[in-house]
Length: 178
Image (cartoon, rainbow, N blue to C red; front, side):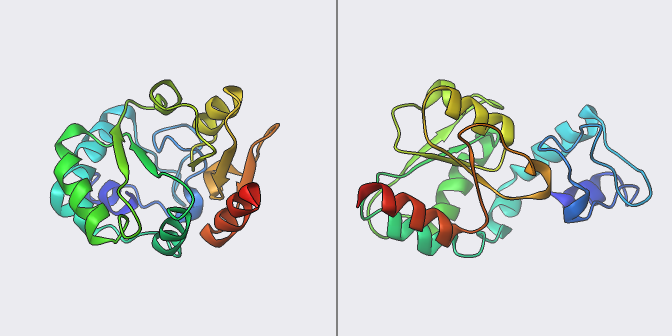
């Protein structure tokens, strides 16, 4: 995403990982080391490009994610929910399959609107996300909410569990069924 922002802005905005201080990259807290930001119009262009099949297929899974999901599939049915645009559907399925996400058993994939995952999905053992606002929505529905730690979600509230790694996610969720 940061690379696409750099490209779309012709190098004007150069976000580092730690510059992303809120989930919405075009929010007021996100500025690069020169104070440059993007607006909603630029974000729309970036999000559209992020859904291009060549971009989707170039994404590397988070460290430990594939192994963790394969482990969790032994006890849980996995549902992936994404706010990628519909044009990314086939590339996303190909990416999930190429990454080995269906090694243990099939998964379900849902394309939803921004911060609408809790409206489409419910009755889960847990929801794993990196958007604090979305995690709050799941927690408000009584769904165990695990928040993958990033600079844009440094504070949590209530029952949301901030998690540092996929191995921690597996450990916590497997403890739930022991």
